[in-house]
Amino acid sequence: VKVCEQTLQLCKDCNDEKALIDSLKNLSTRRSQKSKAVGALIQKAIPWVLKGEDGGYLPIDVSNEVEKKHREELVVVLRDITDGKIFLEAERARLTRALATIKEEDGDVSGAADVLQEVHVETYGSLSKREKVEFILEQIRLTLGKKDYVRAAIVCDKINRKAIAEDGMEGEKIRFFELMTEYHRHEKDAFELAKDYHSIYSTTTLQENESQWREPLQNTVVFLALSPYSMDQQEMLNRVSVDPKMEKLDACRELVKLLLKKEIVNYPLPHAAELENMSAFTDGGEDLTLHWKKTFHKRIVQHNIRVVSLYYRRIKGRRLAQLLKLSPDELEKEIASMVSNGEVYAKIDRPSDIVRFSQTKNPETVLTDWAGDISSLMHLVETTSHLINKENMTQ
Image (cartoon, rainbow, N blue to C red; front, side, top):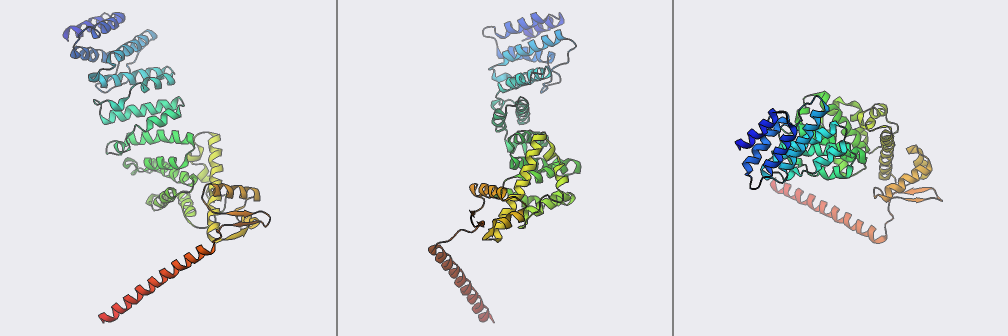
């Protein structure tokens, strides 16, 4: 071990980079070389390419292109030596991140992402939970940076949600869900975006500072409004509506109230301008902003159609279009879409211009419903009589 270390030190003192690399290769590949000697070689050489103590992954600063080239060559050689050696897993992970950082600094984001993807850090037993999470987060960031969204979705599944929810992992949790918002914004998945921002908002370290929790909570409400109607969406809306911090967000509070009421909502909303200036709408470019605005109008129309279906068994198409402030063609298109998705039951009689929201029941169904109602009524009467007799007996 001492001979190996002194050999490397002599090469370094002489500033002979070629001899240093050749010595590393020869000593590490020597037949029957002890694992302690190989480990000593790596530990001796790592401070010459990486900053900081154990766990640091940032490459050392260089002043010219020659030093930069030597630094990259040395990192590559050290990575090759650690390949396949279980006792050097942590060092390989550090060197891989350093090489990815070097490539990213050179503008090769795709190359940096490819380098990180070669390492399956989730299988490394010598790394701590935090180090694994940080490495995977870096993989996600670079994969998104090269616009490989399919692979990004696969890498995201490697993150254990329970692990980042633990105390002391708040920074990693926020960083992970911020990366997820970038992915789900590309997918235009409003409900997943709402869950991402709510996870960021629920982080304990953000609760004390209004400037930190305000935007995630606003975005949660906006993306819930942009989400398709579902039981999960309604449950989350009800949960957000009772949050005490909503009292400080007037526009969001009113929006949630409107969506939870069984009443027709007039579009545009009173706070529409304020809502559309929030980062939920503006982030992602003009095309995405336009998409969210159209989707917002569509969700309001769908809400209104659901409300009308609760109060009307049938209604004239012209009257319904007037109530919803839509043209007959737009109304028909939206109703057809909701029926296709199973959100409402409706039939349109074009010649008569009538929209039916109640399903015609056959005699057997009517009789079954009547029998069920009578049975419930008799059970209620019997229970009441029993309680009255019980009360009379106790007097």
